[in-house]
Length: 251
Image (cartoon, rainbow, N blue to C red):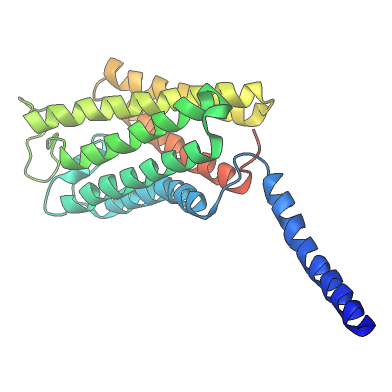
C-alpha cells in the first residue's frame, strides 16, 4: 500500500514537471509583442519584398531587349504593346497582386491599434497594387515610335482603354505617394528618424518628378528622373515589408 502511494506521488511529480515547459510556452506566447508575424502573415510580407525587385527587374530586362524602346521617351507601360506586350501585362498583374498581399500582411502586423498609420498605410499600398492589376487589364496606347511602326511623336487620339490606363495609373501613384507620407509620420512619431526621412524623401521625389513630366512634356531628363523615382518608391515599399517581417513588433 505504502509502495503504491509513493509510486503515485512520484508519477504526479513527473507529470507536473512535464507540464511546466508547456505552461511556460503558453505564458511566453501570451506575452509576445503585439503584431508578431505568424506564418501566413510572413508569407504575405514576403510577397511585398519580392514585388518591387520583380517589377523593376522585368522592366529593365525588357528595356535591354525590346527593339525601339527608350526609357527617356517611353514610360514602362508602353511595353504592354507589341508582340511581346504580354510580358509587361503579366508583370503588372503579378506585381500588383503581390503588393495587394503585402498590404494585407502590413495590416495584420500593424492592426487598428497602430492608429492611422496602421490603418491607412496598408490600405494605400493595397490601392496601388489594385491599380497595377488594372493597368494590366487596360493597356496604354502605342506612342512615339513604339512599338516599331508607330508614328513618331505624340498620339493624335487616345483610346478608351488608354484613358482608363491613365486614370488608374494616376490613382495608384497618388495612393503610393500618400502611403510614403503616412508611414513617414508614423515613423517620426515613433522616433525612427532614418525611416521617417527615407519615407518623406521618397514621397517628395516621386511627387516632384511626376509633376515635372506634366510641366515638361517630352523632356527626356524628366522622363528618366520619373522612372528612377518609380524604382525608388517600389524599393521603399519592398524594404518596408522586409522591415515589418524582421521586426514585426517594432514601431
